Amino acid sequence: MSNVTALPLLEPAEAAPCCPPLTERPLNAEEAERTAKMFKALGDPVRLRLFSAVASHEGGEACVCDISDVGVSQPTVSHHLKKLKEAGLLSSERRGTWVYYRVEPAVLAAMGALLTKAAAS
Amino acid sequence: MSNVTALPLLEPAEAAPCCPPLTERPLNAEEAERTAKMFKALGDPVRLRLFSAVASHEGGEACVCDISDVGVSQPTVSHHLKKLKEAGLLSSERRGTWVYYRVEPAVLAAMGALLTKAAAS
Picture 1: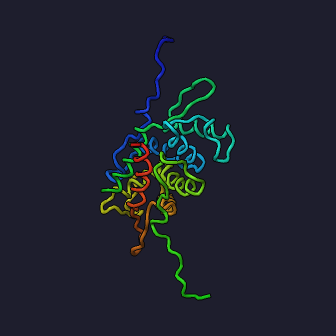
Picture 2 (picture 1 turned 60 degrees about the vertical axis):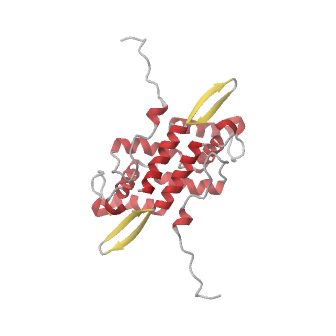
Picture 3 (picture 1 turned 90 degrees about the vertical axis):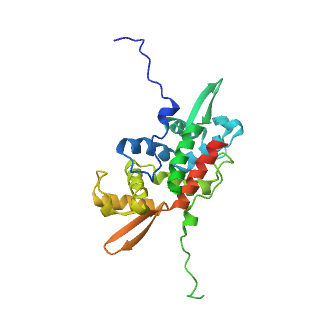
């Protein structure tokens, strides 16, 4: 039992969809579990608005302080941004008082490809 | 008041995402409501597996009778396929005993573009 063992890090790559386009073959249980989490994160209207607010903000990042026009409280905004981060769709960095959230372009692109290639075939 | 007025038809286009890429500007409430429904439909692992089973089936369509390997009962399969249809992701057609489900390529492509263009910008 060593206490210097590195903790496993959640890399963006691990959070990215794992799978071929949806028309190629049925997803297996593990693939579906992993990918459904990301779709679910975007499956809430408030969360989707917040996500687009971050994605469209100057520089592709935003803090809670930048997002105040979706009609929910700041703690609710924080809660949803954390959910999006847990799903691997946003990364975050603390700077001073605020945590800044940024879209994960690779993850989004992989999700898009899952659907776009499926549609094209 | 004429009774020959055509009933409004739900065209696939109406079910399609309405919105610019997520990086372009924050979605408004109505846009988010509409688009979140589709992401939510794919946000359940069983539903996502069933969706990929239909999408990857020969000819891009399948009936409940074709899908039996995701470990849920046939009524549950039917229930999930109906949910995907309600979200605008599948269309259906009855032929004899069975209802056949088919992916809506335009809707999928629009969802893909929402994410892919977002990722590229």
